Structure formats: structure tokens, C-alpha cells
Length: 306
Ligand SMILES: Cc1cc2nc3c(=O)[nH]c(=O)nc-3n(C[C@H](O)[C@H](O)[C@H](O)COP(=O)(O)OP(=O)(O)OC[C@H]3O[C@@H](n4cnc5c(N)ncnc54)[C@H](O)[C@@H]3O)c2cc1C
Image (cartoon, rainbow, N blue to C red; front, side, top):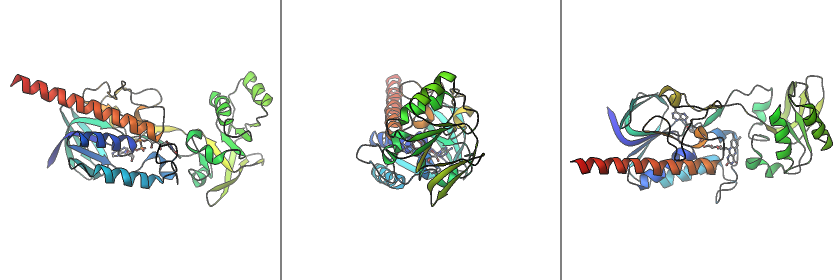
């Protein structure tokens, strides 16, 4: 059996959930499919979302779903969307559990996910004392002794950014540093130590980093780590239906979240390099309004012709 919806949302992080809230309040029939692997699932607390600063990610999600359930036209499926076919007005989405949903519009809110962590010991500290974004977790590590694992032009940029939270940090490029002589000199002027020996392992206790150990035996004691993760899009469905992608693996959208494929929208981390909960939620809300508006205009025109 195929169930019909005005919009099928794939992904139930803040982007997909906020789109569902907007569309539910606009009395649209919505199916939100979510496999439940949000990008921040490794963290204990989320920061920077007004009224929700410091909240547990699972609690954030619980409140969101509770509020959306007040709108009876929104359905939820805990499942993975595995295929998408069709065209504007008549898309067919199938899931890993064999469900089939027809949607007039589709919103990809599939997020980004980390490529496998390739440093020994990093998985044990990720989200506990190792983080990726100083705006999300810098405050908690302020004035602490940090190791920043990043290389090339990013390392130079990251040094300037992290200096806003602590002056006690070391850059560790985990292999060739990729910095110019001028950049290295500038780091020296600012008393930023730079190590380019590969990392052997990160030593930690119950998620708390103790030190970063390099291949030559050097130990860099620290209480926190920032690193530059490698990201991939949360699902290959956008590419499979023909969505244009940037070289960073982000769906190309206009300022309302519309992709190049008619009827397909994308929002949140999947369609943005600004990766924050509140930004994902706001892009989801924006796409929700754009989808509703397109549906209303189409219905109006159809009725005018009858
Ligand atoms: C360690 C860490 C800490 C962070 N801390 C903060 C913080 O403190 N403050 C902050 O503002 N931001 C923080 N972020 C960033 C924040 O998590 C993201 O910006 C935000 O989650 C993006 O929301 P989203 O809805 O776009 O995607 P996500 O939250 O990643 O949700 C995408 C959802 O889509 C699902 N999905 C993907 N493909 C499919 C499919 N085919 N079928 C069904 N479901 C699918 C996924 O399983 C997931 O549940 C942090 C990120 C990390 C990695």
C-alpha cells in the first residue's frame, strides 16, 4: 500500500523537524522519515540554541516531537528512505522496511555525517572532550590547554579562531603541515606551538583526554581537543535524483531551499556549510514555508482552471 502526502521529509534533525512543524501548522499532510542518527548524537549537551542552551540532544528531540504531535496531519516513520523516483507532484519514496510513500514535494533534511575517524583513540573522546566547533563547545573549554588537530590553510585559520577562547593551544597537523613559511612565522610570533609528526594515539580516561601522543613519543598534555572532521552527506538520495552538489558534498539550493530538481528541497547541514542547530532549524522552517507556498499556488491555479 502507498500512502499519499503533500510532502515527504527525509531526515528528522532540527531542519526536518522544524519543516514538519511549519507544514503541520499549515495543515499539510506530511510524512517525516527519520533513521535517528543525528550528527550531534555523540554529545552530552548542545549549546547556542536560544532557550535551549545546554540541553541534551535527546531531550531537544523529545520536546520537538511532542510539540509536532499536536498537529495531526504529520506522520512519523522510524525508518531509512532507500529510494526516490518520480517527478514534481508525484514522487515515490521507499524505505528499508518496505514502506512506500507518495509525496507531491520532497525535503531532504538528511544532514552530514562524519567519515570514519582515522586517529587512534579519537572515537573514545569525540563529543566528550574532543569537539569540532568552537561556537558549539568553545565556552566549556575556555582558557584550557587544548590540542587543535588540523592542517594546511585551515590550521592557520583555526589558530586565529580558537585564540578567542584560549591562548593555551598547540596545533598538531598529524603529518605534513601544508603551511607556508609566512604562516609558520606568524604562528611563532603568536607563540603557537606547531607539531607535524603523525599522531600515534590519543590517551584518555572515561572520555576525558589526558594527552595526545605523537609517533616520535612526544606527549602533548591537554584537557580538550578540537579537530577538523571530514564530512559526507547523510544520504545519497539527493545525488540519485539529480540534485546538483557542491565539491564539499552539499546540496545546491536557492535562498528558499529549492534544489535544481523541481519539487525537491533541501535544508540544514545537507544544504549549508554553516552547521549549527539553530541555523538548521531556521533553514528547515524556511523550506517548509516555501514548500507550503508552492503547494498553495499550484492548488489555486488548478482550481482556477476548473
Ligand atoms: C560533536 C558535535 C557537537 C555539536 N554541537 C552543537 C552545539 O552545541 N550547538 C549547535 O548549534 N550545533 C552543534 N553541532 C552541529 C549540529 O549537530 C548540526 O548542525 C545539526 O544537527 C544539523 O541538523 P540537521 O537537521 O541538518 O541534521 P541532523 O541533526 O544530522 O539530522 C539528520 C537526520 O537525518 C537522518 N537521515 C539521513 N539520511 C536518512 C535517510 N535516508 N532516511 C531517513 N533518515 C535519514 C539522520 O539519521 C538524522 O537523524 C554539533 C555537531 C557535532 C558533530
